[in-house]
View 1 (cartoon, rainbow, N blue to C red):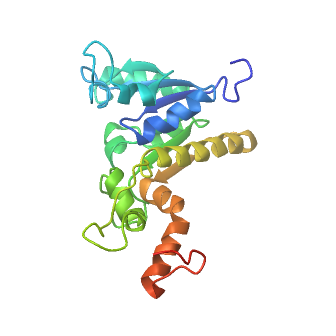
View 2 (view 1 turned 90 degrees about the vertical axis):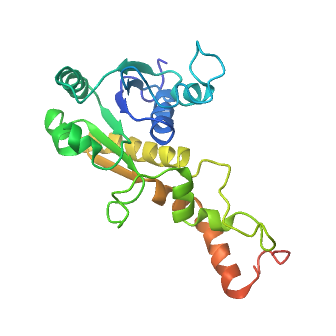
Amino acid sequence: MNTAPLQGIRIVDFTAVQSGPSCTQLLGWLGAEVIKIERPGHGDATRKELQFDPDCPSYYFLQLNSGKKSLSLDAATPDGKEILTRLIKGCDIFVENLHPGAMDKLGFSWDVVHKLNPRCIYGSLKGFPPTSKYAHLKAYEPVAQVTAGAASTTGWWEGPDNIPTQSGAALGDSNTGMHLAIGLLAALVQRQHTGEGCFVYQSMHNACLNLCRIKTRDQLTLDRIGYLSQFPQYP
């Protein structure tokens, strides 16, 4: 750890399930200290999902949260707000993936966090871009793959199974986490020049669209002329 690139970087991880935790886990693998905030009495929703041993967290949870510290905290209570405020004042990165508007309601929006700690980088992961008419909606893996067009590039060309098909890879979740991690790493470099943290926003829709750009090109070509000149064996 003495040579880990993110040694000395502290992250407050206000994320749950897969997209956000995959981002903060990657940063933890690079050496950052990650403090994961979980709901009192429940924890992350994945702690008991597909749980094989009642005395241990599920594989799902462990796959996404290994190496993190964990703190049970209710940010809607005065005590919880005070503790989270102290954590934010001492961290380098704050990451959240709650549903749209949730952080504003809790009182920890980008504007508030920036005032508490001007050097803190704020990472926000949502379903859709802020300019989208769907920006206010929640999103999950299937939603991201379908709206970004990825599902239309997977499956069969003809027959009864010729329907949009979700990829087995987590194009909407873990892929979005990786995209956000790249943005946060860039923000750390930017802070070396400006001395200030910035707001980094990543949508599942755009991350999924970015990863299937070439296959979307192929699908559009197939829809228009019925064949791919670079792959004459298809369809």
